[in-house]
Length: 98
Image (cartoon, rainbow, N blue to C red; front, side, top):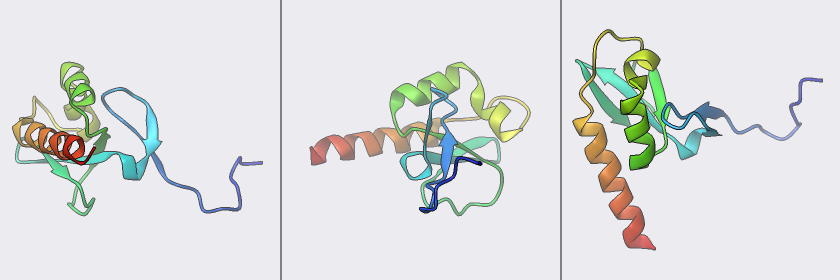
């Protein structure tokens, strides 16, 4: 048996920061564009993607481990300013709704 159920399976991805598996909808897709990590919340940008929890802790772990260049298969370091700004804005918005 393959372990699949007859119900529609929810796709899972692995966070490059904490390395935990989560539903694709819970993670933020990241794409490399011109030497920078760009958030792709809709998941429609072209190119190879990596996934991270939209939390500062996971983002910091991914940067510290140099996971983005490895996961996106690009040489050298990537600029994460736009990504960090997006995660901080998402975190502030979530806290405001609580």
